[in-house]
Length: 402
Ligand SMILES: Cc1ncc(COP(=O)(O)O)c(C=O)c1O
Image (cartoon, rainbow, N blue to C red; front, side, top):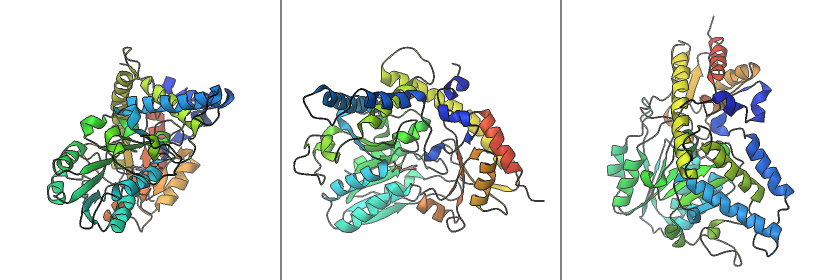
């Protein structure tokens, strides 16, 4: 199947500005279809949901369509799709609800590979509940999070295991299936951070064994909306803090205040955009998105091989992480330059990259680079092309000493 990256890039008005957008791991650009869907939602007349008149009905339909689209993207059920402003907010909300069921001496397992949004909410909730936090450790040399260590970390008192599906800086994809299986066997729940993984590969929450799966639409061409996908029956057993008159149904029970309806329309459009990236046989939205994301994964990995080989060939560059299974996300430092200087130099060449810890707080500590300004992140998503990679490598090559 031919992956037509030029046609894909043409869907994105922002990509015409001459910059190489290698900052997708912090948030992607949006295609015209998403912009149009958001603006059409507003233009049609869009009121608050729950009313008896058409503009209110449209809001309810938009929210329902959004849950259906996210279920198609993740393999979950629409009634198990909790919507909110971003993953961090939703994770604090879920941690608050889950921690009400914890007792002193219960245990929670987190990892130092994770973005802090899948660490701190659990550490703080555990502290309030008197629960013990146990840490899975990344191998700082390989960047792997060995699954075997969870055999010792998970026990009778474990209530929750929080783990990422992919590191947002070094791309490591741990063996989530093995980890969630150990959690389940011990009677614990798993909370999988899919924010970085979802844009790069097909997602199947059931195959992952994730009781909760979090992802943020702004990482996969949508607007700034987060979601947590869970079994509706599991959600039904939890009692989050909420207002007295607000819905007690699932998933609405977890959603505070008025929804960002226009953005939800954009999320649905983003899922359809992903489903159409690699033309496949007609099928359900789920089938199309799986086919498409399988192609995206292969395309990104091939381009990433070039990017990584180019960086590794430069004696003045150090790259971090070499996990066997990883997303197309490079994290590197340049001898004699701070990460900020490198990012500034590249910005001058119209190449967008991030520098710093990128909230991989524990990981950059474990790698011993947090206090030195951490590193530079250059990540690929489905709209990046060989020219983006060439420009990155050319810009970094210019920083060779001498
Ligand atoms: C892996 C990962 N987890 C969590 C988050 C936090 O997501 P949000 O910005 O939706 O709160 C990010 C954001 O960069 C991330 O990359």
